[in-house]
Image (cartoon, rainbow, N blue to C red; front, side):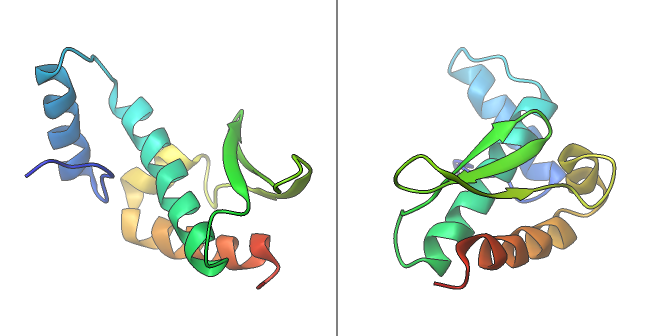
Length: 108
């Protein structure tokens, strides 16, 4: 089983091993940050019925830009950081990201 987007710490560790087998050394933090971005982007695309807005990292904040490159929303962690939120409860973080995707999309 190949893990594309980890949804808990066990899958983060599995993804880390898979990447290592392919010659990529990634830290748990790097894998978690990519997972948070991918999960949020997936929710955003689902809410908008397509890829109209793009999420990216700006420091510890997710920035949402529209098709014209205009920033339309920001998303912050509930706790100290997205990394800490993921480690504490990936499920709770996913719910937060889903709610924020709805808010960021303007419920289009």
